[in-house]
Length: 186
Image (cartoon, rainbow, N blue to C red; front, side, top):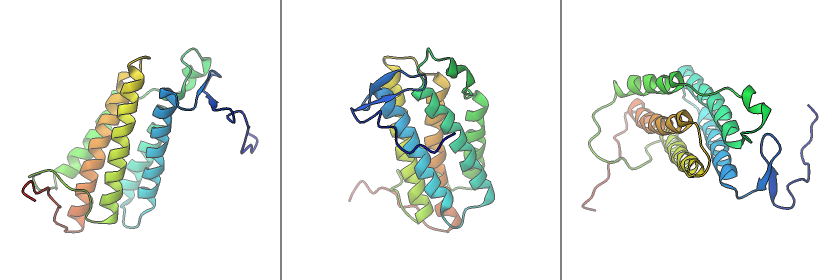
């Protein structure tokens, strides 16, 4: 693959889907895969923070790989022959996230109220991952309103935001920090 940094093909405000169809850069499909790309980038920031276990880094790497496939699904011209080469997500991918959520939850105290993001840098970045993931899921559902999106892709994003919420709580727990619960009387 050549090292081409710029193609100039997007200078007029369009971009190509995988398969060649050109769409406006503000197209719902572009918003969806762009938000998944943003999520993967924020996960990269989390991955690079000090103090993560190798297991958590391994899970984050697995997630980024799944997100690359999911991003490709959103960027795919469905009529393209290339679509047959992009791996699909499976229920096993959702179950993988659920196993890690359950393992962390087993160590956490009972959730008593809404949690206000913060506590430490790893927890804060996990909350950013959660909120970007929620936006990616909303973009996926918006896309699904006019063009069918694989249900497993949307389910994966939903469970992934749960993973990042629990991961944020877990990071506070590991540092013996009290969670910052929402005070409705403030």
